[in-house]
Image (cartoon, rainbow, N blue to C red; front, top):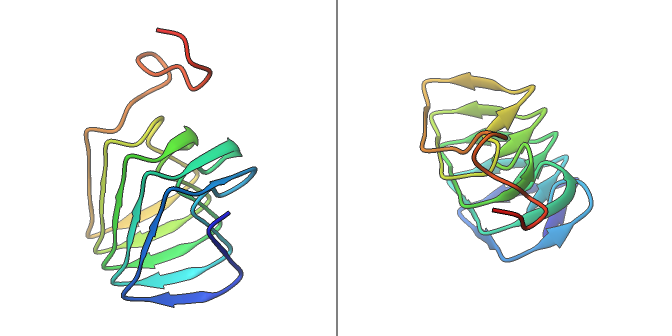
Length: 108
């Protein structure tokens, strides 16, 4: 996991791998970028986080963009399996993959 149980401002979190929440777990993030992270289980980008004015992209894992997260004024794009169990307000979610067109275990 990139960051856990913290508050993050104006940062980029990228290229991390974790079990739950590859990029962030249990955090609140403001004006930040969460990109190219991977989780072996839940929340490729994030698990149990709250985002304000953030950009979340290209994260992989079950709930690639986020699992059990809240997004306010964010852009969430091109993540595997999109969002699971999340709240999304005044945000854009587009180009996220579903389980039908993405195999997180490397198949085609």
